[in-house]
Image 1 (cartoon, helix red, strand yellow):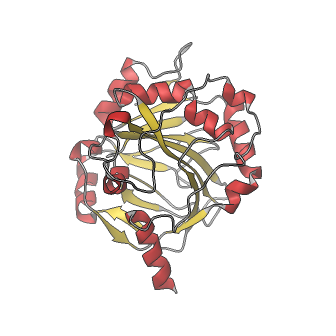
Image 2 (cartoon, one colour):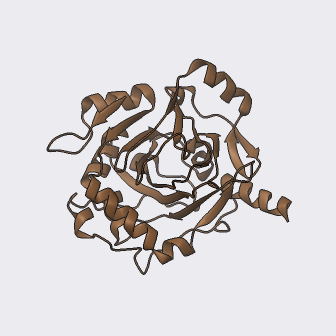
Length: 291
């Protein structure tokens, strides 16, 4: 279900929270306004440190998606979005308690060559990191128009109720068990999440989602911020952090930080950071096979 950004308070209201728990996701139109989304996109396009740390993830048909990933929100415009009251307050409502920043990523599907993502659950990966419970969620924020033509997010409505599905290496990615995915497609409505800049989808970590290749002439830029419940602190170390108190900032800080690019002390992840992460292992295996 789609909701407009609430007037006054920007934290998700009761109907939006109910939609999330029923469907596994909720779309909020205008989570970032036009100016805010434009600032984030313009900054990302000029951010040399962001580009220098981008990782390429292949699909089975030769497409490539680029992702830059970091664990801790920096003193930059991306960090202001991740720490904003509207996002953190909404996540706290969805996960029913205090949350902390698990990681964020900037994703780019370049025109005509942008890669697809297999059907998967985020908890299919994060379970391996010592998170006992599926008390994690992400907010997927469109920075430019996301359409079916340029590989927008697709979800299976209500599929989070299936629980965690086993994942396996398929090509250069880790995907959900194909047999179960096909059955899920028969029983759950498939929704293409076409969005305008600033629109956002909050979604449950067990929601099955995927995206197609970008064969259009338009790029697809997305900022994704992921959160874990404090009560779900991992029982073992992994490449993503355990509980770290998250200091929220007023929503106005997004504009105040304007074109402030990646903080000088920001630490980005690389493909070799931790091969115990199954998605990283999948990419490493694909890279080795190609060699």
